Image (cartoon, rainbow, N blue to C red; front, side, top):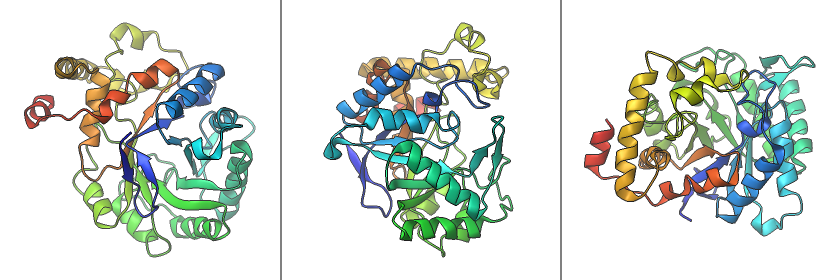
Length: 321
């Protein structure tokens, strides 16, 4: 499978990585509804069997459950076959499941120990700050405590508890604040045909500074897969966060579904699905190292692998718009 070097890490990662957000299960504020743990584990095994060599998760996904599922899936797997595991910190929760944002050094140290315990590892391959602020909007936000947080993660790295450090949802100004403290190995931003805000400044910045880019939501949280219909959206579980997403509601829903039909037509020429076209569109950007694709069942893994070899022509890129 095609691999690319992730920033300054030396890791050669496959251009697709397995996202484990949904594997956290239901019952928490940003859930995708109930999940079958055995199917999640089977999906991880199948992804590794098919050549995917990294998994992305976060402590907050399922309030720790996603990390636990990954540990169960990788238990007993030979070292040479084990994928890299990337996880994130800064979103914490209390006994009632209420999520808050915390960049305090003591909280970050506690989070790291929790992730090491749940993942059943001594060292985390890539440790990322999930969000710079709790507003879930990084645009030029003050993000107090960012420097102290990054310094704390650098101490964790020196102690051998994490190999490399990354950030997620940061803008250029925020990366500039922390880069003198310790190298940034990767950025994880949202990027898809429908979410292109990183193209103007963030992707060029990452390319200039050897910061790997692992894009999340290349299929816009399932909207661009070709399997999402109005009826399916209406029947999403009550605790599926997408029910409240503007992309899944009018007035955006109708043009988004029209886009899916364009992707379907382009994919048909190549024997590929709309999802694979959407992912291939993300991977075409030279600054993108890899794309995170969520899968909860083995067959979903098979439905996206064709994106790796798919090369869109300029006319097809223009057709997508």
